[in-house]
Length: 194
Image 1 (spheres, rainbow, N blue to C red):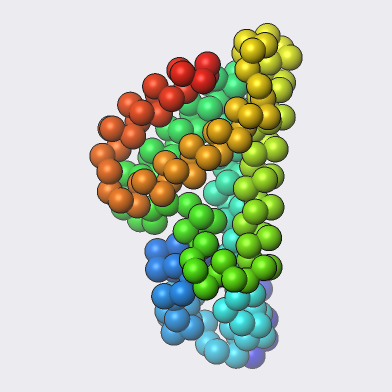
Image 2 (cartoon, helix red, strand yellow):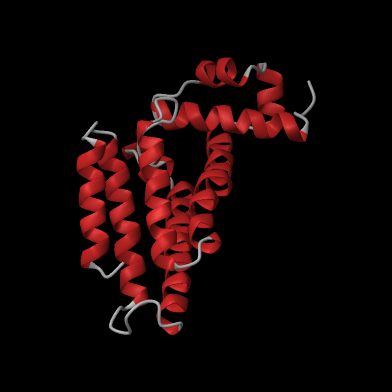
């Protein structure tokens, strides 16, 4: 069996991502992946090697597809304040979409077994650090342009935003009312000057 074609690969990664996102790494079996991805053992091993390699590829895919889409809110809106609120609106839309798994794949992936895997841990830490750096750059530009008050510390605020988003994503998996989380988020953004 040969490798998957590029378009098939992207589709397969999306399907695998959803399985890992819904079930977690530990509870996802090879059978689950083969069934959802609609591929045979030979294609799986020729293309991905093993479950862990596929998982790392799905984390990359998640970063490219989901995280980049959310970051786009900050670069395409007329201001940081509008962009950050737009980003949160997108997050809340995902909460109400029954097809989208709850939580953040990066954070959900940090199960006890995976915490022992340095390669996975490094990847997740790097992705979170990259998202924080992205927020920092956007916040710094907003402060420099005068949109945000000079008293806002871009580095600290970026870190707080990432922590808040990750906590929000984790809480969403507990089926807490979206309206409650939306009110909390609106208040949170006001408190930190956004």
